[in-house]
Amino acid sequence: MELTQATVNDLLARLGPGDGYLYLPDDLDAQELTGLLDGRYGAPRTLVLDGFTDPTVDESKGAALLVPFGDQAVTIRAWAYGDQWVGTGTARDAEGVERPVLVVAHREVPEPLAVAAEEDIDWMERLRRITGWTQPAQRPDVDWAEVESRLGTALPGDYRRMVETFGEGAFDGFLSLIQEPWTLHREDRLLIWACTEHENLYCWRAEDDNPDRWPVVIRTFDGEDVSFDCQAAEFVCRILVDPQHPFTMARYFDTHWFMNYRGKD
Figure 1 (tube, helix red, strand yellow):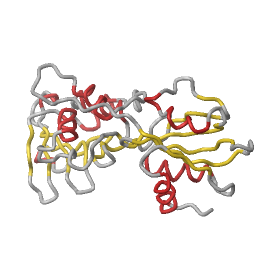
Figure 2 (cartoon, rainbow, N blue to C red; figure 1 turned 30 degrees about the horizontal axis):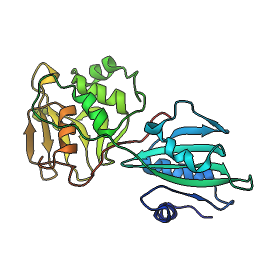
Figure 3 (cartoon, one colour; figure 1 turned 180 degrees about the vertical axis):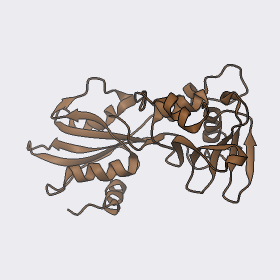
Figure 4 (tube, rainbow, N blue to C red; figure 1 turned 90 degrees about the vertical axis):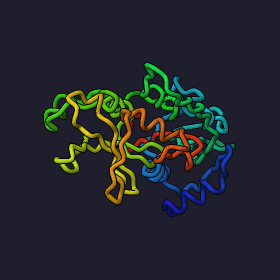
């Protein structure tokens, strides 16, 4: 069975939006399918390896994907994608033959928290809850002293926590989190920390000596600068859940996630 992203689309369409699974043809390369899904959804979490289920697997980590196979799953890897779990690997069929499988299941996503003006909000914790993030920190050992020395400036604390927590990837598969900020025009004092395929650049105006007071500035594709008096984590929270925000993503996605490009299992 020849595998392409179009083939994957067809298989997922056959499963539909709800819970479902398929035993795939024996000549299908399960590793190749895993690679295609990895390229689409980011690094997977391993639920079952060589017949042994990870004892930490629960509903928040894709346990619903294992239900159709009982104790017959051999190797299953899972991706969280919005309100759906996607899994692939191998499992034994009714005759005991190990075969490639593709499985999907509904994923419960925490309700977004309100974004009212409150004091002492931990916006990074709020961002974790909005995205349903349950994985361990992806880049806990970043050498920020070295990064900041190279940039010639300290960086905001919430941004450092975002990179350490989520690693390389994109919010809702759309807003890419840059792992090391870079300068657009040094004279503008703009440092870029995120971007989108629409060519908007998400920056800070790095004029204050205290980076935690830098405002977010969006340099739009047509060169306009739009400023917001908040930090990066708060800004991301607001564009994810506030449909009235000028740069909202809430109009396009009902649930929110972080697409992990090279995360840990």
